[in-house]
Image (cartoon, rainbow, N blue to C red; front, side):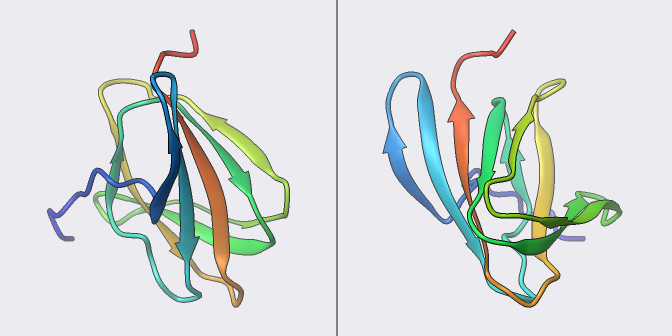
Length: 106
């Protein structure tokens, strides 16, 4: 497993202010975004249907599941950071918005 971990948690930044940063993440079928680091809590909002696999830094599978248009998930960071890859194991483009919360949720 590669040691390259990037800080970019999405494909591009759509908006940023002192409280949030909104990322657009698009992953082609059969591709991964690459190992990346989350240091802040974040909300995922899926656009369209896809099948994703979350892969931990050690290469183990975190989850694999179908995601549906409008699915929304809050992820809280327990500890300093969360490192993983998002791999599109489906046949359609995976797209979601990631709303990174710059202030803790609790």
